[in-house]
Image (cartoon, rainbow, N blue to C red; front, side, top):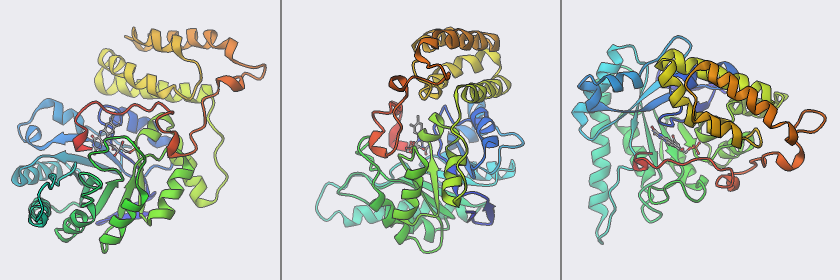
Length: 364
Ligand SMILES: Cc1cc2nc3c(=O)[nH]c(=O)nc-3n(C[C@H](O)[C@H](O)[C@H](O)COP(=O)(O)O)c2cc1C
C-alpha cells in the first residue's frame, strides 16, 4: 500500500526504522534492491553539530542515487537550532526531516501535574511550529508512548505535533522506562492512531516477522509500519511482508549463499562509503548480527575480529563454509537441531538475541 507524507507519495508503507550505526547509507543501498521498502531514515543527527559543520554529522546525512525516499533525523532541544538545521538540510535537497522526540515528557512526580504535562506538550508544539513555519518539506516526529506506564502522553504529544504542522508520527510502542524490555504495546500505538486527525501514524517496535507486521496494522490501524532490528537480521522482511499483505506468493526464504551475497554487497558499500579499512572495521559488529539466521557461526565471529580487507572477508567466509559442514545434512541444509528458532512473535525477541543499544536510548 502506498502512503503519503505531506506532498510525498511513498510506494510502500513498510519503512526502515533508524538504528544508529547500522542502518547507514551502505546498509540502505544494499537493502533497497531486495524490494518492499518505502521510506528509510538516517541515524539521528545533532542539530547543533550540523550547524557547526562537523564532518561527522555530514557523513551521517550522506546519501546517493538509489537511496530514496529518505528522511534525515534531527535531535536537539533548541527550537531555533532545530529550525536552522532543518533549513540547512532543505537547502541541500533533503526531502523530509524527522524530529527525534525521544520522550519529550519529563516525569510528572507531584499531584497537580497537569500543568507540567501541558507545559511539555506546549514545548513540543513550539518546537514543531518553529520548524514547520520555516520549512517547505514535510516534518515528521518519532516518539515513545511516554515516560512510563503512568504517563502515556504520546496521544497528546502526537496531537499537539499534528496541530503544529507535523506530517506524520512514528510511535515506538514502549515507554521510556521500559527501555527495550517487555513487549511492544499495540493498544498504546492504537491510542496514538486515534488521537491524530489526518496525518499517518507509523507503528514501530518488535516487528521481526511478516506476521507481526500484519498484526500491527490490524490491531492498531496504523498507516505504515517501521522495522529496525528485524530488518537487520532479515533484510528480506520488507519483500516478504509486502507479499503477505498483498496476498501474493511469498518469495523463497533466502539460503546461506543469498545471505552471504547480501553481506558481501553490504561490505562493498561500506568500503565505498567509508573506505576499505574503516568500512571493514565497522562491518565487524554488523556482520555478527547479520549471520544469526545461519546456524553455528562461532568460528566466523572469531575470525571477524581480524577483518581488515575485502579479501579477508572472502577468506573468512570460505573458512566458515568448510567449518560448518558437520552441521549440514546431505541436502546441504542445516540439520534441524542447528536451525535457528523461527521468530514467530515478538515474544521471542529476547531469545532471538537481537542486540539492544547501550547508548542513549532515551532518544529512541
Ligand atoms: C542499535 C539501535 C540504534 C537505534 N538508533 C536510533 C536512532 O538513531 N534514532 C531513533 O529514532 N531510533 C533509534 N533506535 C530505535 C529504533 O528506531 C526503533 O524505534 C526500536 O529499535 C524499535 O523498533 P524495532 O523493534 O523494529 O527495532 C535505535 C535502536 C537500536 C536497537
